[in-house]
Amino acid sequence: GMERRQAEAFRDLERGQFMALGPALSRRPLGLRIGPTDTSPRNGTPRLMPLPEAALEDARAIILAAPPPETVRPQRRSSPDLLDQLMAAKSAALAIRPERVDRVLRAVLAQPDAGFRVIGVLYQEFVVRCRIEGLASVVPDLPAFRRMLTRARAGLGSDMAGDDAWQDVSARASLLPEDMQGVFMMIARAAKEGWPCPSDAAIARAYGSHSLRRARRLLTYIEEQGLIVCQLDGLGRRVVTLVELAWATAPGDPNAEEAEQGSLAV
Image 1: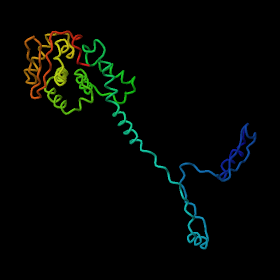
Image 2: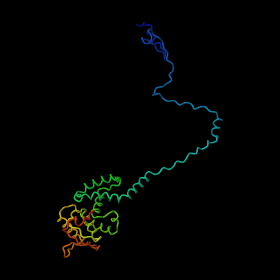
Image 3: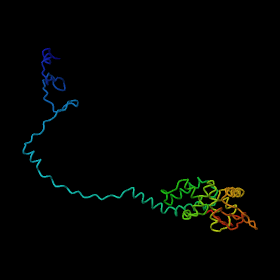
Image 4: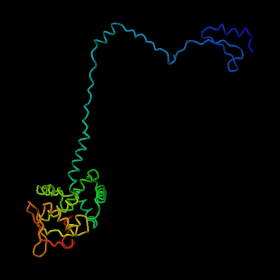
């Protein structure tokens, strides 16, 4: 729809000139000229702009001008060290832990079947009770709980465990297997306090067993290790003496029921 002469006019267009033709623009060829653009493509090369011109007198005045007055900033208050606060809180918790933890442990061992339950079950109940008492942050681990359980079954509190004499007893108990240490310390406490010798039933309970024969074999084993000496008086009552410490229990009936003699384990 365009004459040949009009079509050849496209060849004579200069730079920046275009022909607009079409229903949206014009029904006849219409010449257009595009002016200079204000933007540049992203791949264009940046050019340095000339520095702003300033008079020499103005520059000299700026250089020699008096400095502005310093702004006095208010001193910031030193915030308390968070680590120190945490350490102080932990120290306070450790200071109150022995009494409260001992009370929780005594409550666990006060149950009728506590002496015959495995340590893992006792530890789980101990952890739950400590959380209820607000002692979750200072709950001892399982090895520490084993040592606490050994002292508790021997009737020792945290205050007695720090005694020099009991330090010697603990050192002697460490020569025995872990499950026998509580029995040895229970006998040692009875000897130190002058109480009757624990019966076979009390020893079996402290060992976590119902067998009286096992309790007697346990005493025999401890005696063979050179830690105690067992004797019977004229009435058949048993007396246990700790070697080197010269602590001796009062005569006690080995066949007495635990309820009659009273448990020394808690």
